[in-house]
Length: 210
Image (cartoon, rainbow, N blue to C red; front, top):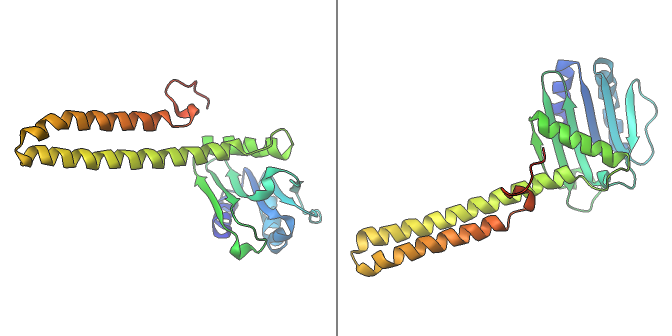
C-alpha cells in the first residue's frame, strides 16, 4: 500500500498540476512524509490529507481533514486527479492492528477517470458526514465477487458440457444422445439461477446509474 501510494505521489510530482488526496488512517503516520508533502503542495493545485487523531501542524497549502468517527478511519486511500492522469488506490483494513507492516487490506486500484471521480466524491460525502459508508467501494467489491462467481459458474458448466459432448461423440450409445439435451438444459438452468442471484444493480432490468 505504501509503495503504491508513493507511485501515485510520483505521478502527481511529475505532472505538477491537479489534486491529490491521501489517507494514512492516523495522522501520526503522516509525519515521516511531511517533507515530501511540502514539495507536493508547492506544485499541485490542492493537497488533502485525511486522518484521525491530532492534526499535524500547518504545512504550506496542505489541507488536513479529520475523519474521526467516520467509516474512512478503516481505509487507506490515495487518489490523484490531474489534467493528463487520474488514478486511485483504495483499501479497507481487514485485521485489527495499528502497526503498519502487519496491516492487511482488501481493495482495488484504477486508472479510469470515472472510477476516480465517483470514489473521490463518495469520500467527500463521508468526510463531510453526509454519508455513513463508502458505497462506491462496496459496489466495486460486489462487482468483483459477481465476476468471480460468474466466471467459476461458466467454467464449471463448460467442463460438464465438454464431458457430455465427448461421451456423445465417442460413446456410441443411444442413451448419450438422449441425455445430452437434458444435460444442456440443466446447465442453462443453473446459469440462469446464478445470474438471478447477482446484485440487483447488475440485473439487465435494473435502471442504469453511472
